[in-house]
Amino acid sequence: MDKNRYKVVGPAGSGGFGTITELHDSYLDRRVLYKQIRDPSNKLQLSNEVDGLVHSRSRHIVEIYDVEFDIYGQLDGLIIEKLDGRDFAKFHQEAPADSEFTTKVIYQIACALASLHAQGIVHRDLKLDNFKASSAGVIKLYDFGISSQSGHLTVQNRGSYIYAAPEMYNPNVTISAKSDIYSFGICCWHLMTSSLPNCLIERPPLQSSDSPSIGSVAPYLDSSVISIIDRCLSKNPALRPGASELEGVLATALIKNKHKGIFTSSRTNSKIYELSSKQPSVKITLPSLGELRAAYSGSEFYVTGCMGDVSINNNPAAANMKFHDACVITFGPFSAGSGREYVTFSCSKPEIVL
Image (tube, rainbow, N blue to C red; front, side, top):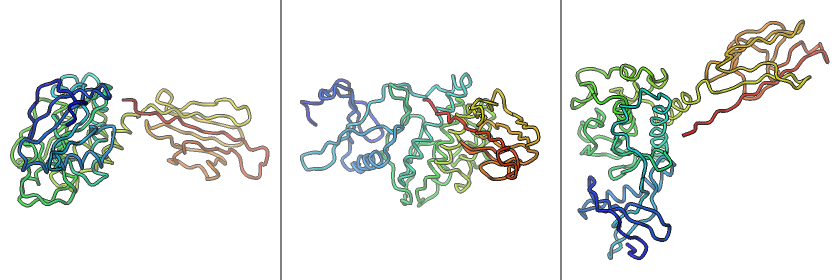
């Protein structure tokens, strides 16, 4: 380690396989963490961590800044981002008070998993202790010491008790991303309550019964979020969702009821109707030409009915047809020529603000 650049500012802490020391990077004027392995025979853990961090860059995964080598050219330590924000050990005490923020917490963990799994990497030790917020409030996943490529064969689980999926208690297990998904489900339970049901605590889990719905302790979550978390804890790994599906469902829940659709007259260039959570249904009637009824479900805009000659982007309008983000609605038959009326539709795309 370059002692001219890095100065020790905090005592070494103890991790699962090594020590972590807080340093001050004098070149970039920031606090960082230096991670070393105590037992040289476990240095593979450092290599695993480098592989996980380098190949799964994401705002929700802790950053690696530098690597250190010993005099023999062997990897000796990692210099990584120091997370100065909150942890989530007692989050269950505040979760019911703000369902949107609670969903944002879950969403950010799902984003980290989606980034990892997209690169074929399985974390293998996902738990409440392994994610924390940065000073900007962005939640990040760390500790990739036992991560591995999906498809790796293991004879020893080495994950954390309670978070380990049922199949991980079998001998000679092939590592799968679906075991991380199970751990994600347990993380969600820990975020909602301090007391897990017995079927999730027993070893292996889910012997006595299937997991109850997380809605039993967190009814304030959106029904789509409850449903997909419940699927994460399926005893059969094939029934668990993928991380990208998790990320998508949670993102949809976070922007639910925040879209706004505007119908504008092409002749007067003025707004006719607004479709939103405050005005979830509209009826546009143009005498002698046609009528269109539309609604907003909280995530999509769609046709609920029509009369006369009405088309959307030159396709005949019909019940349950979804509106594109921008489209043209035509009232009147083609034979009406210049007597036809046109209404444009456009919708806003709300963003997730963390």
